[in-house]
Image 1 (cartoon, rainbow, N blue to C red):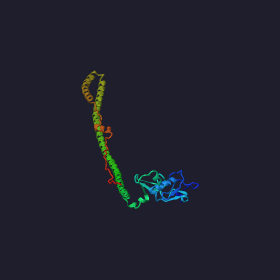
Image 2: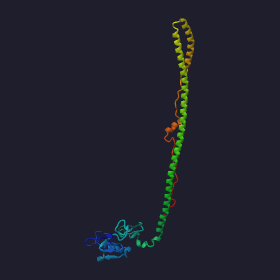
Image 3: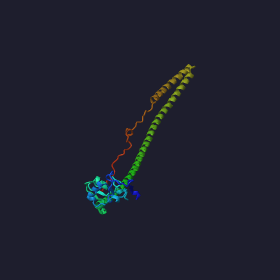
Image 4: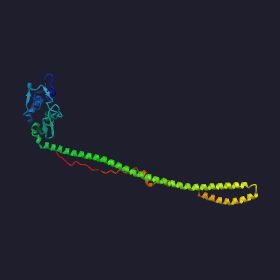
Length: 295
């Protein structure tokens, strides 16, 4: 019994549980508390305690019973050393003998050993058991709903990511095709302009060569006035043709200016933070507890 006992004072003087500074004159076997003369008298007056067995004088135990072989369920929350014995119908509380006198005096008190007989068959207990059973079923259903939602969330995420990547692939394929077409158009414009300019370049080189030859021919006849006159007349006829041809080349020496203009739709898309796509959320299936249980 060592674990459930607390020894008294060195001179075996026991003190009242209700009045700690007063010496005990009696010990209640049913409440398992010590009482001073004043508390003993009050104890006898209460109808609830009339059948309690009191030990006095040398018959009182010389130690404090603190455990009484019970677990924490039977211990009073305000007086851990005391065992719960009473129930207050007014406050719906269970408590010990000390609380019975100090806190619930005048309340509708009930002695627990008297009211707990056949409690297992009471409506209160059976309603509570039914509540736990039904609520457990509801919690299982709720957990299943949560698990299903978690699965759906993962599936939805994966499907939308795949959808986004497919859409991006279509956009990239379209952009690659447009890039190819635009490059081809730029290269075609370049090739056409280069071809025309290169032909003009070739004609201009021919004219330059003809002018050089004509000038050389004139210089060769400078020592013979007759031949110089004839060569000059022939050169004049050729010069007019070369001059006209050179003027024609000059008028055609040009190329086409062009600039790549961005599509305004694409410009708006690039400036818009949600241009490529937009995630539109909607509320999914909501789960409600379908059983309301009242106690």
